[in-house]
Image (tube, rainbow, N blue to C red):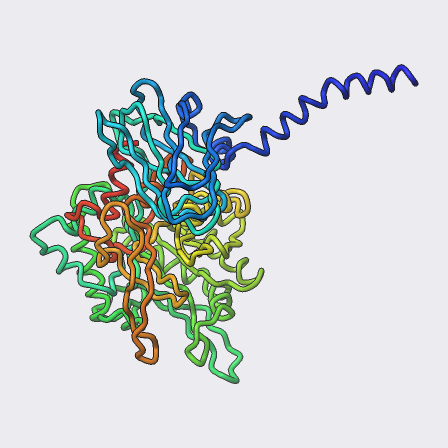
Length: 518
């Protein structure tokens, strides 16, 4: 027994330093490394071999390399001045991807420069780093880069800097799907067809899938108060001219209502605009039902699903075949309990037996069952409605890396089916829910913030707020993230909220740039 104890002690004495070293190395592993260990794969991290220098405007700081990971780091207290970290590669190196981690999320503005001859050239700028910041950089050659933090809201801990040259697709663009939501109730597509420029038509050089919204609904007549009879049929309806309530009802036979004729004219115009480009057309069919008081009701939506299954199959199969579209899109965002989520899951699964199905869900409220997930062709994860501590909505980390990890780990969505959503509108930071179209903001290449935006509240009072967007650079970063994590694709929430395609910093162009490069 004594010999065994001595042996255990000797083994423990030998193994303890190794165990401690392993634990410490894991503890100090950068957030970016945790993320890439499970998903994105890059080449050599050239930051590890670079010499590190730092400086400031009289601010105390700490800089160097992490003992266990070799990652450059920089930390300092809150300051109104600028602090920088410089990486010297000793010789010219190529790179196109930079990964930063700053868990305190206190950076208010930072810029990245490369050395070009005797000059420093700006290659990236943003207002946030956060736990995981994947920066798309246009292909660069340089012997030095400098990261300068000029604004902060508290103590800053730039925990790691990683620099890579990612694999490029030389012969063809990435197979990434690019989904565009197009609201037929907002405008006449026939008018857009007549534009003399590629302001709208150019989108389809990038888009692979367009989802028509604001056009079609399945209507179910709920019992009136005091009635107990439930119907087992529903009606396919089309929205009216202004996109309000559904227009004239029609069954499986071709009708001639004004609403249906408008839908058909817009669909035909869209097909002509797309031309011979390989773009799939989906139609969102609204399934949310109202109770006998005309109020949206999850209860009646679940009952509609349970009682009209065979009739729904007939309606949707006919719609896809008659109008020559690829499939149907569904978005029921607010089921409240297991019964309702179960009903929705069965609806998706059974509809998938008849037509192609694409489901849009909220990253914060998704309990779709596994069978429904397996049957759906694509699943769009809406994460751009999440808000960080600064009141910014749809940031690169919250609606990017964090949303992906949550969808894979907690929701069980396969990456090869997952679409990462990108908002084409900005949201006021004052919590009012006010939104602004990206196309009206003119933010340029780097900015995400529109300052002092004026709007009227419900009482007519004029208020001011900053508005936060997923701007051009952030949209490139999210697209890069989707490609490098092996997702099915990305989506833009509202095609008509983007800037014209002729504008060099339109969001469609941002996606196209990364897709064609990566």
